[in-house]
Amino acid sequence: MRKLILAISVLALGSAAASADPIGDRQALMKERGKLVGGLAKMVKGEQPFDADAVLAALKGLEANAEKFDAEALFPKGSEAGGDTTAAPKIWEDMAGFKAAEDKYLADVKAAVDAAPSDVDALKAQIGKIGPDCASCHQSYRIKKG
Image (cartoon, rainbow, N blue to C red; front, side):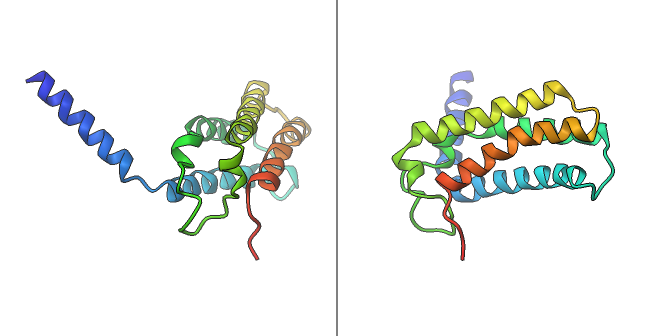
């Protein structure tokens, strides 16, 4: 009986993965990332008062988001064509470089979490490390709209 349940579970998991929407999944992950960074940017710009607890929560959210990033699952071959995507063909041409860019981003986010910025200047320093990771990836691996 256990083997039957295990076999059904494996089949269900496999079919769920096969029917997943990689374009939608990666867009949702990036929208979440953008929203978290946007909140931090408001504090850096002085549009919102600095809140150490909110900063740490946002940084931990970015860390969890980056840890969910699986380049091969989110950017499988064939997902570069069709659909509403701004993913550049370079992702599939240079998957190793793309993964390395994401790994650097994750390392910088983890360092920011570990630093736990206690004031706006410390937050600016951490954003000064994370921001270029985002910009570099967007320049290399994203097609600009319009």
